[in-house]
Image (cartoon, rainbow over all chains, first blue to last red; front, side):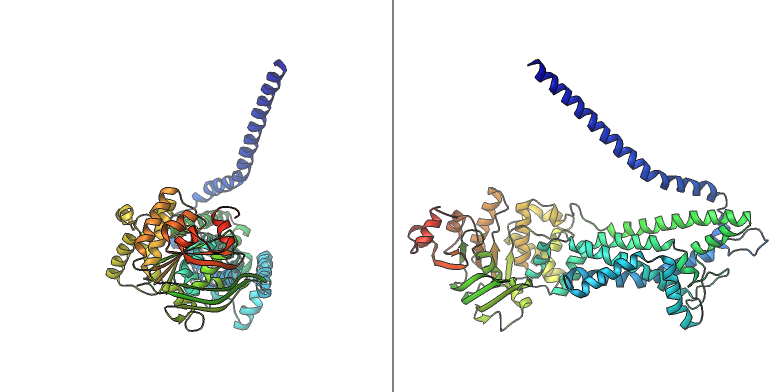
Amino acid sequence: MATQLNSSTLNRRWRWFTNHLATVLAVASTILVVAPLIAIFIDLVVKGTSSLNLNFFTKIPAPVGEQGGGMANAIVGSAVLLGLASLLGIPIGIAAGIYLSEYGRGSKLSNVVRFTADVLNGVPSIVMGVAVYALVVVPAKGYSAFAGGVALGIMMIPTVARTTEEMLLMVPHSIREAALGLGVPNWRSMISITLKTAMPGVITGCMLAFARVAGETAPLIFTAFGNQFWSTALNQPVAALPLQIYVYALSPYDEWHRLAWAGSLVLIVLIVVSVALVRFVTTRGVLKGAS
Amino acid sequence: MGVGIEVNNLNAWYGTNHTLQDITLHIPANEATALIGPSGCGKSTFVRCLNRMHETNPIAKVTGEVKVGGQDIYSETSAVEVRRRIGMVFQRPNPFPTMSIYDNVASGLRLNGFRNRRVLDEVVERSLKNAALWDEVKDDLKKKSGASLSGGQQQRLCIARALAVDPEVLLMDEPASALDPVSTAKIEDLIFQLKVQYTIVIVTHNMQQAARVAERTGFFLNGKLIEFDSTHKIFTNPTDKRTEDYITGRFG
């Protein structure tokens, strides 16, 4: 009797110990994951805010040797580039995702498309820049905002396509049957029921792709090229925040270094705000109890 | 009003699996017809052939003749058209999770391009009343998601959704098998009321349920229709030995 009791208390202590060990490990890993992110953000805030003022958002870069200046043209340029990229990448990506999950399931073509998307996802962004340089910039005989948008847009396609596919596959079969059973044509059920049910996940995929290309510098070097002046013309070189940060950070001037820090902070905040905004707008209509 | 269904020499396959073999039966209008039989006997496949849902599976195949109200649904019309005339309620409640209660009921009409608000309001109210759900949900029609209702309510919501497109036939594939006894009783009461307007075909595992709600009962076994007769006859004096064995619980 005594030994039995003994072994059960021992068991309990051992369980207590392993339980708490697991908790500690989990918490430690969480901190390890979040810490670099927070460290980067704090660093940006500390070094960036001092150079942030109204001029940063309203002025174009000052010539070398002059004080002041801002990145207004780069902020607008980035918006133009990302707008173009989204217009190109999101529709094509979603359409490809729909094909993969709804129409081409198990077909040879869909396997090719899926494989291509995965490879495209792994292509270094500088290679994408060179490819678009050859395909768009050379025939058009000049760098342009359009070429930059194409480069970023192509980079968005695989992420959007694959997440759309995954999200559509998660929509239960019973929901599709419910729509078909009501005498709804296949295409209509696809768009109004299946895609709509998967929409929150699809939007997450689009936002992931958007945030990823928003910070890309390499593909823009060969395409949008960058611009020290105001320009929103699609057939002209255009400034972009990552490009401007790249140029300023590599320069020998302290003033430009500070502006590069400020630019980095603005870039991060703009990405976070736009992602949060899209989330807010697209989830506002969600009903109570909807899963 | 409901219409009768005439099935002649219906055969169905899933891949190489011959799931329905030479089914011939006549389902009269404005009655409830129950289909019973052990799992995998083909009764679900049979009702799915009646509104051409069977063919949504790429490996499925079907031959034979199904006439609904005199029209051959396989040769004289389209699958989409057939499904508008023949509503279906599935085994598990499947409301559209992103839609409100109102939108769920209106979905059949809306997705077919119908937009008149006033008519939609009327149809939604009438359908929910016919499905005996109106009193429970009328206060938060547009606020609550269909998925937030209880299982029994969800199933009645699905019935309302099917009724809203004004079908002539209502197919029910084990509509109460995922529900508790109280919800089951409500669905059965509902079947009694709906018979007046619609022809009902109900697949059920529950023999008491078949005996309670249906005028006629068909017994399926291994893809064949063994016996089809008035419910009273099937349960008191079946002709076939296998039917008797099944309803007395000797197998299945």
